[in-house]
Amino acid sequence: MSSIIHGEATVLSQRVRRITAPNPGMMTGPGTNTYLVGNQELAVIDPGPAIESHVDAIIAAASALQAPVRWILCTHTHMDHSPAANQLREATGGRVIGMRAANLNAQDPAFAPDQIWGDGDFIETEEYRLQAIHTPGHASNHLCFYLEQESLLFTGDHIMQGSTVVIMPPDGDMQAYLRSLRKLKKITLAQLAPAHGSLIEHPEAIIEGLIQHRLMREKKVISSLQANPDLDLEHLTPLVYDDVPPYLHGIARFSLLAHLQKLEKESLASEHQGVWVWN
Image (cartoon, rainbow, N blue to C red):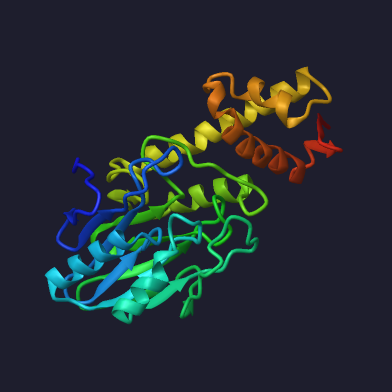
């Protein structure tokens, strides 16, 4: 496992380098990973936050390779992923590629893609092929990028190292998230390259583990509703997340709402004036 040092271009494979932005935190782990793919024509995945030193590090890594940045790919438009795209485009002339979010809350308001991608769109060079896989759930516009030559999936925030991602409605959707995880099980994967953390081994086991974890949490939601009628989010959270430290309950409440909305779509639960009941 390669260590993470902010601003350093770490070689992960023949075609891939990682530069981690200096924005560590509870939601970002060690920081947002930016990946450079290629040696002759570069694709930059997740340019990251608009931090000048981070943009400079990306440009320096490209200059060291003596290779142009052709494409700037954004997995989604949360503020720790896409804001540097505009600065990087101005500096390199690379084309910004991504999707627009269905709901603009907590999204990058300055995101202005040169090209909007959907599921299956790709770029191909003599060195590599990168294909987009639409994986809504964490965000409606979330894309993973599959590097065919290495069976490597750049997962953005769809899969993180060492923790589960927050699903925050209205743009986040638990039903879509589980569907997207199952979609990835159909792809041949050797490793996962998350936007936060180091490379992840054993992708199939990790993906199945995430699915089972969410289903376990859903069972706790169901049992809590069945045993305690007429509860709001504040009172449901400590019941459903009794294995999570209380200081994280404020964040967990977003994913709890996403679980409840999934059950509501399936006609298993309903809400009235903030109170949830089992149908």
